[in-house]
Length: 156
Image 1 (tube, helix red, strand yellow):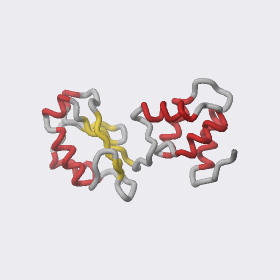
Image 2 (image 1 turned 180 degrees about the horizontal axis):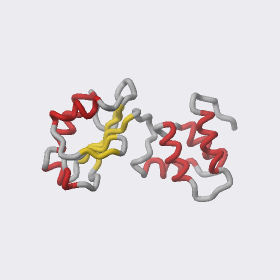
Image 3 (image 1 turned 30 degrees about the vertical axis):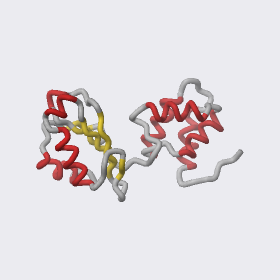
Image 4 (image 1 turned 60 degrees about the horizontal axis):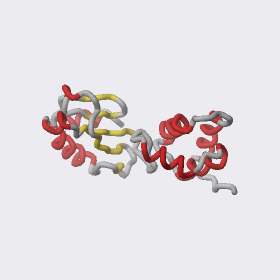
């Protein structure tokens, strides 16, 4: 069974090539795929199944379990807003409301220009700095709705 070639085909095969013949590599492979493509397309799942003989159900189970992985396209920049208890009581929902308004998207959505994706999380592990957002792996704390526009404008 051959798969239709897409814009991602060469990149997918290049990544899979690194893991051919190795055991227990699915998570690492998917993380690299996520980093390079910003998501795990269906084509990647099917190519991993075909080339590495990993069941499709296992690939989807792993890809849907870990929040670092996404089965739908993400923007160039990932904004994760903490809504854990400490951040919530310090205004995390106001931060979420402001980011939604500034970007014009809701959690689990991506801007039409694919610049930003928005997610909420239960805890980012830096409660003393609440409310906190993570933007491309960088943490920003003690935020207010007033300073979010300036922060987001730094990410092209």
